[in-house]
Amino acid sequence: MVGAFGLGLLSGIGGPMFTIAGTAGIGAMTTVSGVAREVFVLASVSRRRAGAYLFATLVMGTGAAWLGLRWN
Image (cartoon, rainbow, N blue to C red; front, top):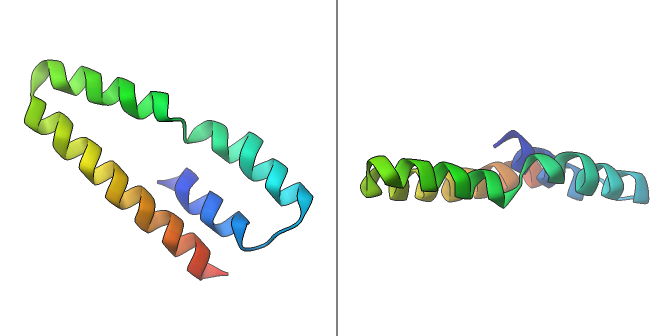
């Protein structure tokens, strides 16, 4: 969520240094592979829990990015 918020915040500022910081720094923190791994591990325990986690991650990440955009 912090990464999504940070990317939303930096996208409103502009400039090449902010693009590099957002892509290289914060973008590395928000990898899809991390979410995929968590969903896979949770699915081995409970498919319902894995689905709820994925849904909550998508909704909260989108909300955090929107909040970062609006913060500017």
